Amino acid sequence: MSLTRRDAIKQMLKVIAAVGAANFFSYEDLVAMENGKMIKPNIIWLHGSSCSGCSCSFLNIEDVSVLDILTRYTNIIYHPDISLATGKQVTDLLDKASKELKNNYLLVVEGSIPVAMPHACMMGDRPIMEWMEQMSTSASACVAAGTCAAFGGITGMQGMDAGVMSIGNFVKAKKLNKPVVALPNCPMKPEHLIYVIFHYAKFKTIPELDAEGRPLRFYSQTVHERCIYYSEFQEKNYAKKIGEPGCMLKLGCQGPVTKNDCMQIGHNNNTNTCIKAGHPCIGCASEHFPRQIMLHTFDDKRAIAKFKNFKFEG
Image (cartoon, rainbow, N blue to C red; front, side, top):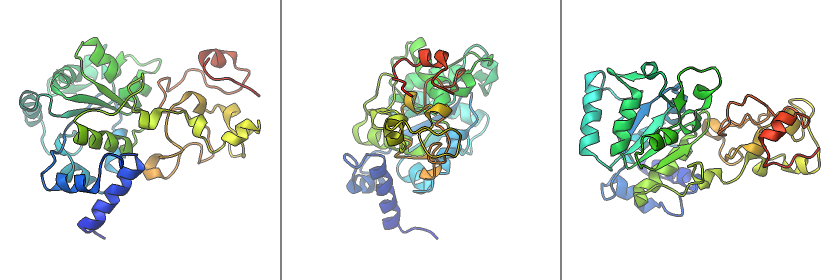
């Protein structure tokens, strides 16, 4: 059943409220964007080394119509998965945008940049690292969509030969002097990107970030601090196997060393999270994901030494 415009705006306002943007973005702002009285942010989306899972997550959002986001509240210049342009049309489009839209678009990058193996990720006849440098130079800001883009993630795990760099590290290495918003999650939560887009639309700047470039709105606390089993942890009531009630820290839960808002905004349209599904947090939003050493037990001295900021008791 199709929504009326009134219902569609109501749905969008619910999402804005859910992600904490209601204190600066109002109903009047949404109407102004629809009527052309507020400039819609230009978005250019690039793929580095990735599985396209973050794009799938964004395009499958159900709380609001993704078409509304793409057409009424943003101006999508290019997205690899949904744009009709192919081949030379794409390269010409990006060349034109980098010249004519200087400092007037958000560059969303999904996946990491394979600097040691440039041919592993090509667009046209040029490596993605060249496109990344060109497009980020002209962008207002960059958004690292997902853990691979934010920290390297699975594409940067031990054994990979591509020598990938996160978007933030790439921008620093090239001395591009552009702000980078990191939105780690595997896959990225579309609600986080919506927050960044509306913040940029309203203030023409990025939201407040932590030391790792993550929005404080979502990454100010660890999963452990917000966990539904935190009281069980305080009582030292630990689950002995997956599926049992109790704190899952002894089963390898990464909550204490992972900053994320999973207890407030879950994956798949807030359907579920690792912990709510009865499984330890895998730490997919952490800069250490995927880990070589897991916190299987309190007796794992290697793991305890790796994460010194957390006080282990048990």
